[in-house]
Length: 296
Picture 1 (cartoon, one colour):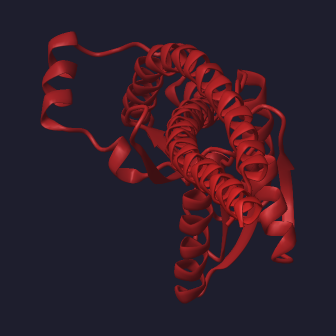
Picture 2 (cartoon, one colour):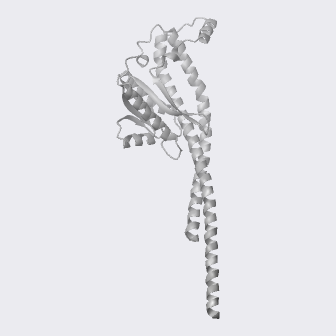
Picture 3 (tube, helix red, strand yellow):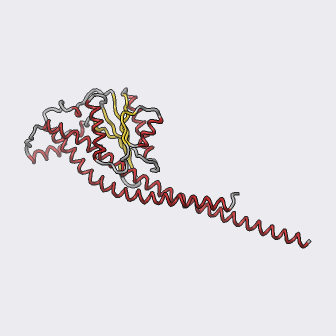
């Protein structure tokens, strides 16, 4: 059995760890509130951008001259996992990478080559450890992404797609549901899905009520300017969703760690009391034995 000093030393160590996890939980909670505000403000804008793209595409006579809307035979797909720069966030990074590797197997089963572009130090280190070739990587902004970060990723993807180096782009990230729930999502952002551009009955009725639009310049030219912005917007929304999910996962993980530390302290305290009682009992037995020896 461990001595009272050893158990007491371990209790102090666990208590200090508990202070750290509690502080990290509070920091993650504060960052989560800010991230929630940003993503809730971003979602309506992204939805309206998609509606604008769809409306302009319906008015355009042809989209063949727009490189980012070109649909061609797919040979190479780009997988873009959005991971975090730090750990201690429960399954946040692991579930993204597992889904990304599963997606790679599916693509190779379909006869497609896969290229990796990754955001976040955790994803980059994992791919490097597994000896994957990384076409591009970005890091340093997983906690608080900016629009410029999304632009950097979008520009690289657009360059590869327009240069016919890739024929499809799939982003894998955690969609924020709540502080306790983050859902892994695979979103194909290039080429733009045809079903997103289809006209629904409700949209036809709205167009009929509004009447004909006059576009200046031509819809094709407007669309050519809007599509890169749409790509940046979708990536920015994905980064914000990922940031909020990371903080929620870290807050939950640190809360569980603090709870487990408290339970371990209780267990160690009980063991320490038992060890102390055993020492006291042993000392009493030694005193009684010594007294008996003196009286004999």
